[in-house]
Length: 334
Image (tube, rainbow, N blue to C red; front, side, top):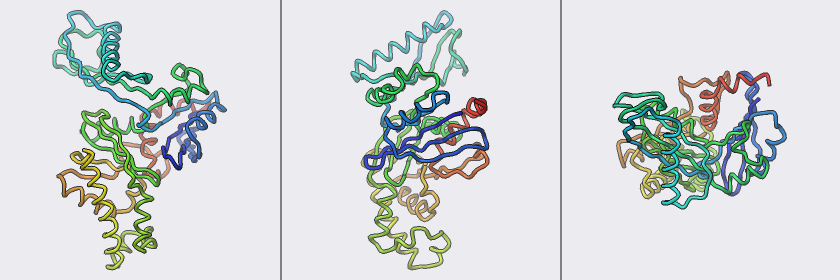
């Protein structure tokens, strides 16, 4: 059985949503109001289960290198490791990084300008992209307090929570440059993806709670949960709601511009995608700056929901189990 722990990083309200997976018909989830150490400690009570920690991107550092090199002999694992080691040394020289490597991998492989799936045993003019992901030392040590050397524990995996979502969006949208926007009750996170990889992660204090407070300040809290048609049929309600969201959107887009997030298509992952007034007004405001769009991401025909309706904020988890379903559901009888 798999336990997947998805982190909601917040100074005031840290918590983990836990997904307990038995099989395709039994995917349960609940929220534990715990910090990272307590969540890891809780997971250790189930040593026979596999545990995946989907941690906030701010706990990681991301590096990407474009490698172009001629190989006159067939490439071996030793050759690949030498390239990886040289780039790790370069990172240490430039950043003086003390964090731990959690993942290295390659893609976009070309040999003599022909696309290839694998690099080993190829020779000629070779191009590929090398990705190196580090986890912060303090976060890794927090997990190691429970698991010893967690990187050697085959029952535990650690990853940036949006990792498989970015892969899925790249392959589905055929885009390598976009922004992932997460708006939840207690935080708003913005992730800039450039040439498919993470180039910037930032937080803004305009989360859903702040919009709710704007509704309250304008005496329209009772409209917060009205459906789209009901608000559209009431001119006064529509005007008050629109003015409130417009102010929020103007402030939001100003922050995006000041922090260099503005010039890309944006994918929104949030419970707020159910509010079509919000989507329309935010898109209109965003469109004043560029020709890009903000697209809600809460469903895809390419993803299985495994028999249940999923909340928009479940998207990272849903993409993960779609990518790993053969491995995960093969363990259902454990």
